[in-house]
Amino acid sequence: MKAMRAMILLALCLMIATAAAASETIKIGAVLSVTGPASFLGEPEKNTLLLLEEQINASGGILGKQIELVIYDDETNVNKCVLAADKLIKKDRVVAVVGPTVSGNTLAIMNKFPRAKTPLVSCAAAEKIVKPVNPWVFKTPQTDRHAVQKILTHAQAAGLKNIAILTVSNGFGQAGRAVLKELVPAGGMNLIADEVYGPKDTDMTVQLTKIKSLNPDAIICWGTNPGPAVVAMNRVQLGIATPLYMSHGVASRKFIELAGEAANGLMLPAGRMIAVDQIPADHPQQPVLAAYVKDYETKFNIPVSTFGGYAYDALMLVKAAIEKAGSADPSAIRDSLESITGYVGATGEYNFSKTEHNGLDESAFVMVAIENGDWKVQR
Image 1 (cartoon, rainbow, N blue to C red):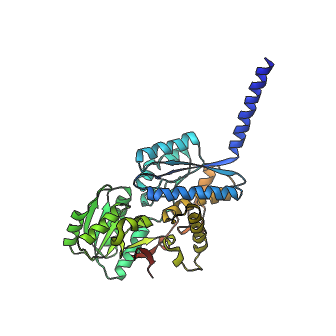
Image 2: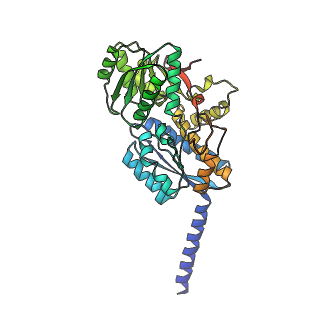
Image 3: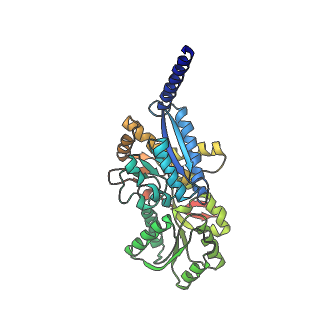
């Protein structure tokens, strides 16, 4: 009997010790599209989070506690994203969630977070993620509106007035299309074509042939890979010389690989990370980007991606919020995130408030052109 009691006592002690050890970590969740069609976005995001977890813990953690990342791959599937979000909230009981990667998945899960009273910092771009403001939802990528404004400012300066748009029919494309349809006429320009393609379409010659017949001054394509690469190649095949703008959704080396020679001459708004060697030495983002790019490329031996930068900012903002609050309580993190201003990240300078949960403005973008298979910042 004594032996049995001793064993039970030992088991209880081990359980208490395990629970105590667990409480010494700060558990942060992430749901990302590491595989599937958006893997070129989600893989660098996952790599970045793993890099930061290692760096943060090596430097003492947050508030003296190690962080533990729980990362799920939604495979670019909205249903799997919903399941992963439920698991992070209900089973893993994380204090905050980073991601998802794509807009449609974010829009599908974001209303779970007010009920769970857990902050979500999305890595997706759609304006609808933060407009209207959901008190528990933030996002790190630049907003569609700022990207459209950057493109239209460039087109107006070039004297381009008649605009055709070609957008993908998913969450990212629908959000961009809505802003384009609002801002093109608002800027005194003419929207002369409004064509749409499906996320899995492999040939857009029908839409481009129709656009070509209307003789626009410029075409704006809004989507993420692989569709925009197909549009670029179809444009060349059809002999269309009309300037083609892309969205920030293709700002990765993968797009150039997919589009090949057809990528040359295309223009798009992008974060400064895409051409870090062209950033002036005195720019506030230069030291942040230089360190991140060096550390990422050293660890993974592959080029860095602006999309990894969105995850970099998301986790570092959560870290800053915990440190500012002096607490890893989810409500404290939410309140603290909303009070962060002047935070210089990989994507730009974040200034959050109760009415602003993206925190970036148009200055987070530069216009780049693709020249000889590489990015060239436009002055």
